[in-house]
Length: 449
Image 1 (cartoon, helix red, strand yellow):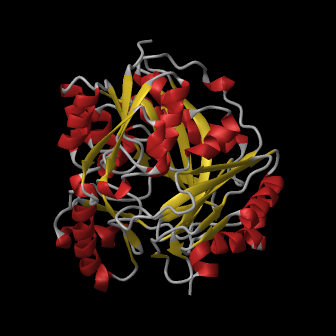
Image 2 (cartoon, one colour):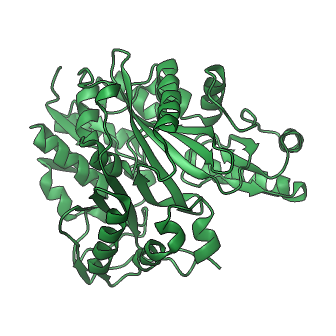
């Protein structure tokens, strides 16, 4: 294994801090970049050096490839970790890193181009016998799209081919409003991902959202690290995740994990990634949905149940190290739950609520982990994602994990801005959640008017 002399962290906030800590433990020098909005952020002090890369809007800073590359060159970095969001799944960025002899800590450009395009990923899954919901390839003409949607059968989902996170997605139940939704999805996809391409697939009513974490080295070895259940969402964006899933059996885990590894092998995938599926609890069927070619926000729950540091694994794999374990070595221990603490008003359509945190008390104790970059007096910028912290608990059983999460949420105090904490407290007390009887429509059904 070669070693990196310096890693540039091409991100901000919680994930930037997460990467800085992992690199420091590996004895690797780090450089953190920041926009004017993040100037003076406390986590920057953990980096060996820092570089301002532009103004607050991400288009002129965290999404500006030339500025990121220039920062790497002037700081002497030989590797870049993109975290999640921003440039993490940008194939052009990965190609430029390769041309500039910078190692991107993540998959290769061809991996991102193939699997980051959701329509192409669907085609590869079909070629490898992985079950899919009925759907199309990328379609640009609205009349063709309507005809294909009618063949699939309503309701359908229109999805951005180049992205995720709930953007460029529309559920359409009535053919009469399909064209309007198709056009708006294309516009949103272009704005969010730089590509207007969308595809159409059958919409599965209230499934569970199951995703499989994979790791792959440069030598063809692929393992999966079990599943995360990400069914609790608002507007197709995850709010609570846990591992293992309450509905997963050992046999189903082996089958779905096998699908994920098969797809990664077919793509010649390298580094960390996540293969996402929809699970129909009524039939027990699973359907491939998409691949995220990056570290996920919810990676801590996998770390807790597997006893691994996924960011360190990413760095080692990018440096050319072999996977240090085989599939039979992966054992899931206990239950981990993660909740996202967002600066939003959950009872006002999750309206973002940036501002100054006047008072902050973080929970602690046995089995409690908080990943955050904020502190008392921190001014939350309005330019970026509203997540300010992730609260993770890990206990021997799911019921113990829920009890610890309730206790930790009662301790978690944020004054000065509204957060999702009150809603999450209610969810943790809901009898259906306690019994594990949830799906992707749970929050909409019980907590949103």
